Image (cartoon, rainbow, N blue to C red; front, side, top):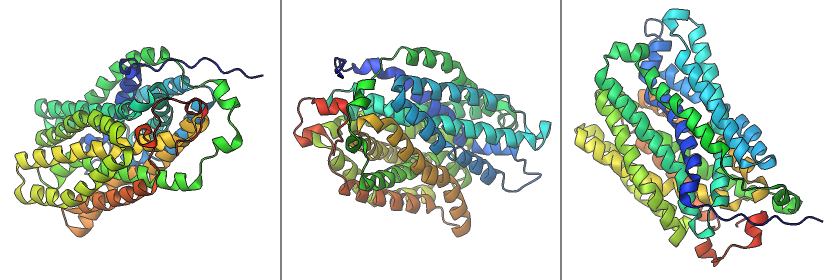
Length: 436
């Protein structure tokens, strides 16, 4: 007869920082490619051969999203079958290997067509690794958190992603300040990836020493019905994750947008990225705490209403005035609102999924959504901007996305324990009842 293992104590917030360190590094290296899209395009897609180097570079950035669903299936399900910890270690190891490959890949001038081919291969490995990161790590955070602090713990996911944005932006700001454009194209962008590579051994050590939050008992005692994920929840979760993905990568496009559309210098453009990251890092834990106190839905839907009113005017101001102060101020506001849009959405979806299949289900939903929308956002914005000639394209694109996300959240059930009257943890939280 199965006997339940003793419930492990919930972990203090400082003890789950190993998840954050790994998450920050993986997103640092994945996003760094986007921030250095212009010099990478010059390195691997020289303008002497094509006038579309930036588009090809952004397309290669998008290629990394193609393998995210595959990584989600393989590593996410692995996290349900063997544990959250080994899945997180596996994804982190693969990301480290891909980073090393990118850093060592010679330019087109050195090895010809083999250079962009290798570039694409390593981007595919990066996508596979990152696709398997979000499910196990977010499931771990929900399961390690006291029920009334799940929003705060899951906000670590986005907070560390935004730390990665700050770090990547600072790396770009400093490198573009110190190096000439020719040096940045030739080898400067590789320095940013090397910075991330240094952290890999530390992150692996920290993740190896994490406790496990799911056990064989959790999988054995749940029935097939309890493991089933309703189709309605899958659809709403997909729309929600698609909307937040478009917004995230749309706002992060500011580095390229500031140079390509506003004709700002690379140094000032990377400064805008730093502003976004700092604003979001400060707002992420506040978003998580507020969603714990008043619920996931009010926080996200409130952010949607404000964004619908502000996005187009913010971009109109940036394009009309082209002032550094205006661009930084507008993007800081959008960065703050990003936190109140994304964190409640992620914790709501995670809480809604049964524990026994939480890692794999979340990984697949997130990866499919971000592959369809996140991976195409920056390419689509650039292509539509070229087609329409309008510098307001990013604003309209993101406005449509956040409206769809707000509708999906409105149709979901509230999952915050404070709104459901669950002041104490129950055994159902341990063995996998859905939160809806």
